[in-house]
Structure formats: C-alpha cells, structure tokens
Amino acid sequence: MAETVPVRCPACHREHRYTAPVYPCVCGAPVTPPLDRHRATTPVSHRVWQEDWVTVRCASCGRSGEWPRPELGCACGTVLRVPVAEGRGPAGLGGAAERDTAADPDTAPGDTAADQDAEAARKATPDARDATAATAIAGTAEATAAGADATAAAGADAAAAAAAAAARPPFRSVTIRTALDAVTATALYLRWLGYRDVRRADQRPPSGIGLAARGVLAQVDPAVRPATLRDVECLWLTAMSESADCLYFSLAGYADDARARADALGVPLFVLDLTGTPRPVNAPAEALATTGTGKSAP
Image (cartoon, rainbow, N blue to C red; front, side, top):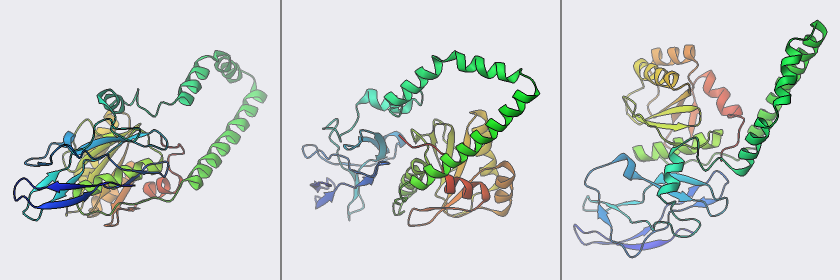
C-alpha cells in the first residue's frame, strides 16, 4: 500500500500530505517507491534527465524498473522533489551496481537463471549445429523434408506467439498530464509488448525523448505539433545504425508524409491519448499491438 508523508515547502512553508504513486509491475503487482521521512524535500530549480528517474524493485517478483522520481507541486509554484529511501527492503531502490547493470543490456536483471541455463545449453550442443549442416548438404528428399519441417516450425512459432499475446494481461495505462507521464506510459507499453530492459536511450533524439530496450529504440514525442517526415526518418536511421527496430509514439499524431514514409520503412506508429493508452495508426503498429514481440518481459 502506498505510504503518505508530511511535506513542507521550503519556499512558502506550506504543509502538504504526499502519497507515493503506485505503478504496475509487468507481473501485475503494484510497485511504489519507498519515501524517506527523515530527509527534507528539495525544490527543483532545473531538470536533469538522469535525476528524474528512480530504480524500484518489485517485492513480488524481484524485477527492477525505472519510474519517475516522486515530486509535488506546491500552490506557490515551487516543484518539490520528495526524498526516497535508498535500498530499503525488497521493494526499495536498487544500489549503484544494480542501476549500472540495468543500464547494460548485456548484464541486465532480465538475464535470469533460466536465460543463463538456456544459453549454456545452446553452447553445449554443437552436435545440433552439425546435424543441421548435414541436413543442408543432403539430397533432394532430405532437403524437401527439411523444408516441410521448417514450415511446420514456423507455424508452431506463429502459434506460440499468438498464445503468448493471448496470455498477456490487459494493458494498464497511466493518465497523461505531463511529458514525463507520456514517457512513463510508453515505457509501460513497451514492457507490455514484451520488450526487455526498458531504459533511457543512450542518445537523445533531435526531438522528443528516447527510450531503448533489447533490440528496439522508441521515440516519445509530447509536442503539440504532429511528428514530421524528418522525425520518422531520423529515428529509423538511428535504429539502423544500432541494428535495432524502432517505434514512434506521438501525442499529436503524424503528418501525412511522415505516415507514408513510416509505412514504406515498416516503422510502427502509435498515438498516445490522454488516458495513456497507445493507439496503433499504421499496419506495422497494428501487427505489433496484436501479437507483441512473442517474448515475455522480465
């Protein structure tokens, strides 16, 4: 249950009662940052992207995720940053080592023991690769059989992806009131789709805010103007340079030429409504929203 702490504004000395926000973990359990009652609030004089996020561990499944740092707006106009208890309990903040791990997609907390066992099993079975090579150089009959097996495997993969999509819980949105809310809603949606280790992108895009996950870049555009052709092309080029897929999320929609280019490049486009629910607006986005990535998020 979210806790409530007294907050005093250092500028006007007004007293407030602040209740910590509750976010949904990908496992479905509520997650809330633990507040520190013994430290004073501090006014936010300027924004630093890295300082706007806090890492919180879910008490139910142990996953760690980045969420907006608790803040409160005073009636005098001051924005107050509410202190968070570092490393408190299983649902507390991760330490510096954990945050560094979360920033590294190769050593992220999503690499569970099951993932490591599967990787070890894959490396320990060279015979399977040898068998595949032998099949590739076999005669016409064997090649035909292999083709039939591949078709059956593709059908099984498609069925597995459809089953995984059907097993996903309903998406829980976050009401969008600020640009940070738009980023939070997008991060939740990426996890719901099945992308792993959602975090801030290493490079900031020319416009909007960048998020990254394993194998994908996402751009969140909270501007009041529709996203332009240049916005879509820049995102696609950046993703190509990193050998990643890309997705675009906009609050104000897209210009006609931007939608046409996204269709040609296969870039999924989503529009964020004020309820925080992304709505697909082209065929690649519809397909992704329907099936997800076919993988479960960590």
